Length: 536
Image (cartoon, rainbow, N blue to C red; front, side, top):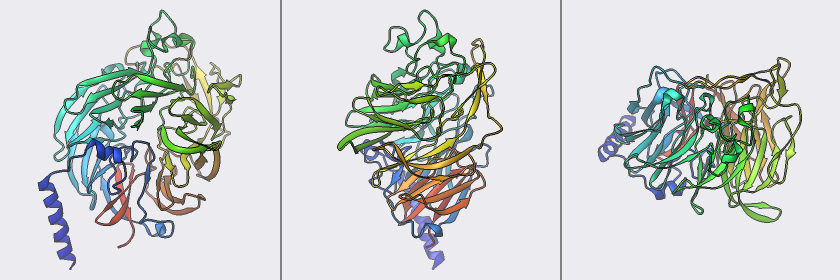
């Protein structure tokens, strides 16, 4: 009997391979997780929810989850990507510009693609890649040396290669692309090397650039007066993009969080608010024109990138009125709820310990606490440069109305000194040191966006870089900093299950999908993918 079933499964896989991959349409991407067997975008849907409608795994049976298979990359470096799932096939990227297609049932490799990495890379934080995008019969991938690639979904063959910028100047691309209609939207990283960041759209068929938005405003542009006039400070102003944005089809706007200004800690040569760094920008998806922006940390001197995922929601009841909002847990330690039509602040409150601002004003500007600027001798401030949270993705459960985020409780001593700009040389003009007398830890926190108040938390014994995933059955999946992946009850935070992976999760908390009537929970960790399911 088992042999017959195995033959049926193998024949099904072979037949699917002969027929070729399905064609993914723009409507499929718009539908998000209406087909819960798929996971077609970085965050599962355009709103950035990371919330699956699957309910086979529940709070009552999650303790029975067991590992079904493990895929080992055979290469160095840690996964930070969210796998794409299309009809039983996983598409995932990894360290050093690798990409794979994998059988979602068994973990068997179908194809592998490797983009050669130059020997003279200029990157601050490793040759990481946070994921892929799909449309039609193509898979799209950014590379650490600043290229955008289109691969054949069936074979992994390279279809086109678009150079984005000169990697020798410090430009790199690590975020998963965002496909909207007929465009692939990407963001550049490299602020630590004095680049001028940008968000750019390319034609999905040809790879040709369609529009570009600079995250550092130049002379004569809106926001250009927030940089020193008559200097080239804006040309080295930073504004990295690390994480994939979100999309509001009704307004035809894409939302991206932008990185810190450059240099990081020494700011005498960049007086002003330094737009559009440390901001949320709302861009027209067809033209790249900015409709509105919200700057979280004007003139940032603590390396508090705002490159977190902007999470969108409809009908959030605030003061008795339904609002269309964007929610943003920021690296500076505050949780923001913003009207996504007007860009105006609704409310903002700390979600971690912070010592640099008394509050956020009704206009959205922080009311500063004196004595928190970096100095040559060092100034202690909370949070540290890693922030209250970072690139790890949050989740929003529309059934409970709760926002879930991995929080970091850390402080640092910030130092600064003057450093001349040199092309391709890391340019931070300072650094940080953690005090030895403090307890650093992480926590999974549930926040009510109606009030920005914390509903519950689960504390970890160490700082975590895990993202969060929720499901309609009332589960929250996340990980600590010690290699454990965990499941929690979404309404109470009760810990229901854990599994020691051996390496801590970074960026993502995994993906869940259905194949042959069976729900899988897939976790990237270290150089391995591990798939979990309930016993059959």
